[in-house]
Image: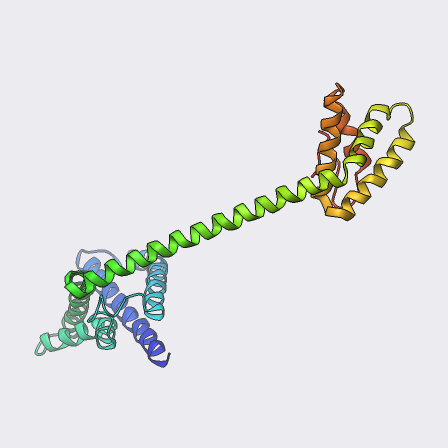
Amino acid sequence: MRRQDELRRAHVASTIWFVLAVGYILVLTLRQAGVKWWVVFSLSGHGVLIAAVLVSLYLFAIFRGISSSQKVLVEHPLTSSTYYAVFYVLTPFLGGAAGCLGMIGAHGVGQFFLGVAMGTLGVTFVVWVILDPVIGLLELLLPPSRKHRLVRLAEARAERERKQKERERLLAQVLAEEDSQRRGWAEMFEPQAQRLAGLLEEGATDPQQAEREAVGIGVMAWQAGGLSCMQEVRDTAIAICKHNGKDKAVADYLSFWWDGIGNWRATPLGGRS
C-alpha cells in the first residue's frame, strides 16, 4: 500500500513537470512567432483550465490502473513489475535529465531550458506513447501469456454465463412465487370478490352501504397481502362483472372506494398509483 502511494505521488510530480515543459515550449514558440505577451497570457488562462481537466482525467485513469493492478503478472511479466512502474512514472524526469546532459555547454539560460523541456517532451512521448504499448503487445505474444489469457477469458465468460443463469433462475423463482401468491389470494378472497362484483352492480341503489362493505373487504385484502393483494381482488371482481355483462366503467367505484387504504390511491382512470 505504501509503495502504491509513493507511485501516485511520483506520478503527480512527473505529470506536473511534463505539463510545465510542454507549456514552456508552447509559450516560447508563440513568442518566437511574434505573438505579444498579452495574447499569450490571454490564451494561457484557457489553456491552463483545459490542461488541468485533461491531467485530472489522465491521473484518475493512471491511479486506478496502479491501485487495482489490472495487469496480470503472467501475461505482463515486465510491465506489471515494480521496476517498470517506477521507470514509467519517472519518465518525464528522466527526459529532463537527458535534456540537461544534452545541453551542457549551451549558450544562454533560455536555450538550456528549451533543451530540458524538449528532452522531457521527447522521452515522455517515446516511452508513454510508443514504447509502452509495444512492450505490452510483445508480452501478450509470448506463449505463456497467450495461454493464460485464453484460460482467463474462458473462465470470465463461464462466470458471466453462470451469473446470467443464476439471475434467470432467481427471476423465474420470483415470478413463480408471485403467481402462486396471486392464485392463493384468488382462492382465499373468492367469496369477497363475488361480493364486490355484486356491490359494483348494485352500488347505485345503496351507494353508502356498498362503499362500507367494499372498504371492509379492501382492508382485509390490504392486511392479507398489501397493495398486490388488493389489486388481485379488484381484478377478480371486475372480471366477474365483465363475465356478467356489466360495463367496464364499474372499475371506477372500487378505485375511489378504496382510496386511502394502505398505499392505494385513486386515479382519474379508475386504476391505482
